[in-house]
Image (cartoon, rainbow, N blue to C red; front, side, top):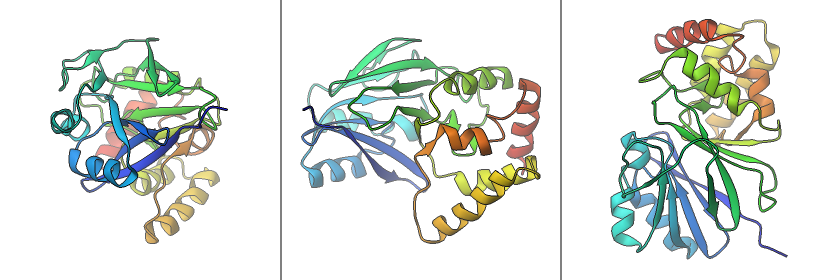
Length: 243
Protein backbone atom coordinates (compact mmCIF):
# COMPACT_ATOMS: atom_id res chain seq x y z
CA UNK A 1 0.00 0.00 0.00
CA UNK A 2 1.64 3.24 -1.14
CA UNK A 3 1.35 6.26 1.07
CA UNK A 4 -1.14 8.81 -0.22
CA UNK A 5 0.31 12.22 -0.94
CA UNK A 6 -0.90 15.27 0.95
CA UNK A 7 -1.04 18.86 -0.27
CA UNK A 8 -0.38 21.48 2.40
CA UNK A 9 -1.09 25.20 2.18
CA UNK A 10 1.56 27.72 3.21
CA UNK A 11 0.47 31.35 3.28
CA UNK A 12 2.89 34.04 2.07
CA UNK A 13 2.84 37.82 1.54
CA UNK A 14 -0.70 39.22 1.85
CA UNK A 15 -2.66 36.70 -0.22
CA UNK A 16 -0.30 34.18 -1.86
CA UNK A 17 -0.53 30.44 -1.38
CA UNK A 18 2.53 28.23 -1.69
CA UNK A 19 1.67 24.54 -2.00
CA UNK A 20 3.71 21.73 -0.46
CA UNK A 21 3.21 18.17 -1.74
CA UNK A 22 4.44 15.60 0.78
CA UNK A 23 4.60 11.85 1.37
CA UNK A 24 5.28 12.29 5.08
CA UNK A 25 9.07 12.49 4.80
CA UNK A 26 9.93 14.24 1.52
CA UNK A 27 8.34 17.25 -0.13
CA UNK A 28 8.05 19.30 -3.31
CA UNK A 29 6.95 22.92 -3.26
CA UNK A 30 4.91 24.82 -5.88
CA UNK A 31 5.59 28.52 -6.56
CA UNK A 32 7.67 29.49 -3.52
CA UNK A 33 7.59 33.28 -3.75
CA UNK A 34 9.08 33.47 -0.26
CA UNK A 35 11.45 30.90 1.24
CA UNK A 36 10.97 31.74 4.93
CA UNK A 37 7.44 30.35 5.50
CA UNK A 38 8.34 27.30 3.40
CA UNK A 39 11.46 26.53 5.48
CA UNK A 40 9.46 27.04 8.69
CA UNK A 41 6.76 24.66 7.50
CA UNK A 42 9.24 22.01 6.33
CA UNK A 43 11.15 22.20 9.63
CA UNK A 44 7.98 21.93 11.74
CA UNK A 45 6.74 19.00 9.64
CA UNK A 46 10.20 17.33 9.50
CA UNK A 47 10.10 17.19 5.69
CA UNK A 48 13.08 17.16 3.34
CA UNK A 49 12.65 19.28 0.22
CA UNK A 50 13.40 17.43 -3.04
CA UNK A 51 12.11 19.74 -5.73
CA UNK A 52 10.25 22.85 -6.84
CA UNK A 53 7.56 23.35 -9.48
CA UNK A 54 7.25 26.86 -10.97
CA UNK A 55 4.21 27.94 -12.99
CA UNK A 56 5.60 31.25 -14.30
CA UNK A 57 8.30 33.88 -13.88
CA UNK A 58 6.66 36.46 -11.58
CA UNK A 59 8.61 37.22 -8.40
CA UNK A 60 5.82 36.29 -6.00
CA UNK A 61 6.03 32.76 -7.44
CA UNK A 62 9.78 32.18 -7.71
CA UNK A 63 11.35 34.76 -5.38
CA UNK A 64 12.24 32.17 -2.72
CA UNK A 65 13.95 29.68 -5.03
CA UNK A 66 17.56 30.78 -4.53
CA UNK A 67 17.26 30.79 -0.74
CA UNK A 68 15.68 27.31 -0.83
CA UNK A 69 18.60 26.15 -3.01
CA UNK A 70 21.03 27.47 -0.39
CA UNK A 71 19.12 25.69 2.35
CA UNK A 72 18.50 22.34 0.66
CA UNK A 73 21.00 20.60 -1.63
CA UNK A 74 20.40 19.11 -5.08
CA UNK A 75 16.88 20.39 -5.62
CA UNK A 76 15.16 19.58 -8.89
CA UNK A 77 13.63 22.82 -10.20
CA UNK A 78 11.08 22.44 -12.95
CA UNK A 79 9.46 25.43 -14.60
CA UNK A 80 8.31 27.17 -17.72
CA UNK A 81 10.35 27.80 -20.87
CA UNK A 82 11.47 31.23 -19.66
CA UNK A 83 14.78 31.15 -17.78
CA UNK A 84 13.72 30.94 -14.16
CA UNK A 85 15.69 31.06 -10.94
CA UNK A 86 17.42 27.96 -9.93
CA UNK A 87 18.58 27.04 -12.64
CA UNK A 88 15.34 25.40 -13.70
CA UNK A 89 14.61 22.62 -16.15
CA UNK A 90 12.11 23.98 -18.68
CA UNK A 91 9.07 21.93 -19.59
CA UNK A 92 6.48 22.23 -22.35
CA UNK A 93 3.06 20.86 -23.32
CA UNK A 94 2.46 17.22 -22.31
CA UNK A 95 5.86 16.78 -20.65
CA UNK A 96 5.72 14.44 -17.65
CA UNK A 97 7.14 15.37 -14.26
CA UNK A 98 7.58 12.81 -11.47
CA UNK A 99 6.87 14.05 -7.96
CA UNK A 100 7.13 11.61 -5.02
CA UNK A 101 5.78 8.72 -7.11
CA UNK A 102 2.99 10.73 -8.78
CA UNK A 103 3.13 11.70 -12.43
CA UNK A 104 2.18 15.25 -13.40
CA UNK A 105 1.42 16.37 -16.95
CA UNK A 106 2.39 19.86 -18.06
CA UNK A 107 -0.17 22.09 -19.76
CA UNK A 108 0.95 25.29 -21.45
CA UNK A 109 -1.56 27.91 -20.32
CA UNK A 110 -0.41 31.38 -21.52
CA UNK A 111 -2.43 34.53 -20.91
CA UNK A 112 -1.32 35.97 -17.58
CA UNK A 113 2.25 35.53 -18.81
CA UNK A 114 3.42 33.92 -22.06
CA UNK A 115 5.49 31.28 -20.27
CA UNK A 116 2.75 30.08 -17.88
CA UNK A 117 2.33 26.34 -17.31
CA UNK A 118 0.00 24.28 -15.12
CA UNK A 119 0.83 20.94 -13.50
CA UNK A 120 -1.92 18.28 -13.59
CA UNK A 121 -2.03 14.86 -11.93
CA UNK A 122 -4.57 12.06 -12.05
CA UNK A 123 -2.30 9.82 -9.93
CA UNK A 124 -3.94 7.35 -7.56
CA UNK A 125 -1.66 8.80 -4.87
CA UNK A 126 -4.12 11.72 -4.67
CA UNK A 127 -7.77 11.30 -3.61
CA UNK A 128 -8.93 13.21 -6.71
CA UNK A 129 -7.26 14.68 -9.81
CA UNK A 130 -5.28 17.82 -8.90
CA UNK A 131 -4.28 20.91 -10.88
CA UNK A 132 -1.77 23.56 -9.86
CA UNK A 133 -2.91 26.48 -11.99
CA UNK A 134 -0.71 29.32 -10.68
CA UNK A 135 -2.28 32.61 -11.79
CA UNK A 136 -4.16 31.24 -14.84
CA UNK A 137 -7.35 30.01 -13.19
CA UNK A 138 -8.41 31.36 -9.79
CA UNK A 139 -11.48 30.48 -7.77
CA UNK A 140 -14.17 32.40 -9.71
CA UNK A 141 -11.52 34.25 -11.70
CA UNK A 142 -8.51 34.27 -14.00
CA UNK A 143 -5.19 36.10 -14.01
CA UNK A 144 -4.75 39.58 -15.44
CA UNK A 145 -3.55 39.63 -19.05
CA UNK A 146 -0.07 41.06 -18.49
CA UNK A 147 1.61 39.41 -21.49
CA UNK A 148 -0.96 37.31 -23.31
CA UNK A 149 -4.25 38.06 -25.05
CA UNK A 150 -7.86 37.26 -24.22
CA UNK A 151 -7.60 34.59 -26.92
CA UNK A 152 -4.64 33.00 -25.11
CA UNK A 153 -6.52 32.97 -21.80
CA UNK A 154 -9.69 31.61 -23.40
CA UNK A 155 -7.77 28.65 -24.86
CA UNK A 156 -5.84 28.11 -21.62
CA UNK A 157 -8.96 28.03 -19.44
CA UNK A 158 -10.64 25.66 -21.90
CA UNK A 159 -7.63 23.36 -21.72
CA UNK A 160 -7.99 23.19 -17.93
CA UNK A 161 -11.74 22.73 -18.37
CA UNK A 162 -11.17 19.40 -20.15
CA UNK A 163 -10.15 17.86 -16.80
CA UNK A 164 -12.68 15.88 -14.72
CA UNK A 165 -15.11 18.05 -12.74
CA UNK A 166 -13.84 16.52 -9.48
CA UNK A 167 -10.38 18.03 -10.12
CA UNK A 168 -9.14 20.07 -7.17
CA UNK A 169 -7.77 23.38 -8.44
CA UNK A 170 -4.88 24.77 -6.39
CA UNK A 171 -4.34 28.35 -7.48
CA UNK A 172 -1.82 30.76 -6.00
CA UNK A 173 -3.91 33.57 -4.47
CA UNK A 174 -6.81 34.14 -2.10
CA UNK A 175 -8.73 36.38 -4.50
CA UNK A 176 -12.02 34.51 -4.28
CA UNK A 177 -14.14 37.12 -2.51
CA UNK A 178 -13.19 39.95 -4.88
CA UNK A 179 -13.63 37.58 -7.84
CA UNK A 180 -17.15 36.65 -6.75
CA UNK A 181 -18.11 40.27 -6.14
CA UNK A 182 -17.28 40.83 -9.80
CA UNK A 183 -18.86 37.51 -10.89
CA UNK A 184 -22.31 38.47 -9.59
CA UNK A 185 -21.97 41.73 -11.52
CA UNK A 186 -20.94 39.88 -14.71
CA UNK A 187 -23.73 37.29 -14.42
CA UNK A 188 -26.39 38.78 -12.13
CA UNK A 189 -28.91 36.02 -12.91
CA UNK A 190 -26.53 33.20 -11.96
CA UNK A 191 -27.90 31.97 -8.62
CA UNK A 192 -24.98 29.59 -8.08
CA UNK A 193 -22.65 32.59 -8.03
CA UNK A 194 -24.78 34.45 -5.46
CA UNK A 195 -24.87 31.32 -3.26
CA UNK A 196 -21.12 30.96 -3.51
CA UNK A 197 -20.56 34.65 -2.73
CA UNK A 198 -22.60 34.32 0.48
CA UNK A 199 -20.65 31.21 1.51
CA UNK A 200 -17.29 32.85 0.79
CA UNK A 201 -18.21 36.03 2.72
CA UNK A 202 -18.87 33.84 5.77
CA UNK A 203 -15.68 31.78 5.25
CA UNK A 204 -13.46 34.84 4.90
CA UNK A 205 -14.97 36.46 8.02
CA UNK A 206 -13.75 33.41 9.92
CA UNK A 207 -10.37 33.47 8.15
CA UNK A 208 -11.05 30.18 6.34
CA UNK A 209 -9.23 29.61 3.05
CA UNK A 210 -11.41 29.16 -0.05
CA UNK A 211 -8.72 27.21 -1.94
CA UNK A 212 -8.60 24.56 -3.34
CA UNK A 213 -11.73 24.87 -5.43
CA UNK A 214 -13.19 22.21 -7.73
CA UNK A 215 -13.49 22.40 -11.47
CA UNK A 216 -17.18 21.54 -11.11
CA UNK A 217 -17.76 24.64 -8.95
CA UNK A 218 -15.78 26.79 -11.39
CA UNK A 219 -17.98 25.63 -14.26
CA UNK A 220 -20.99 26.96 -12.34
CA UNK A 221 -19.58 30.23 -11.02
CA UNK A 222 -16.42 31.41 -12.83
CA UNK A 223 -17.40 34.14 -15.34
CA UNK A 224 -14.13 33.73 -17.28
CA UNK A 225 -14.38 29.96 -17.60
CA UNK A 226 -18.05 30.45 -18.55
CA UNK A 227 -17.30 33.06 -21.22
CA UNK A 228 -18.63 31.68 -24.54
CA UNK A 229 -15.75 33.15 -26.57
CA UNK A 230 -12.55 35.14 -26.21
CA UNK A 231 -14.28 38.45 -26.97
CA UNK A 232 -16.58 38.06 -23.96
CA UNK A 233 -13.65 36.92 -21.83
CA UNK A 234 -11.63 39.97 -22.90
CA UNK A 235 -14.50 42.31 -22.16
CA UNK A 236 -14.99 40.76 -18.71
CA UNK A 237 -11.27 40.86 -17.98
CA UNK A 238 -10.92 44.57 -18.74
CA UNK A 239 -14.12 45.25 -16.77
CA UNK A 240 -12.74 43.30 -13.80
CA UNK A 241 -9.41 45.19 -14.01
CA UNK A 242 -11.34 48.40 -13.33
CA UNK A 243 -14.04 46.96 -11.08
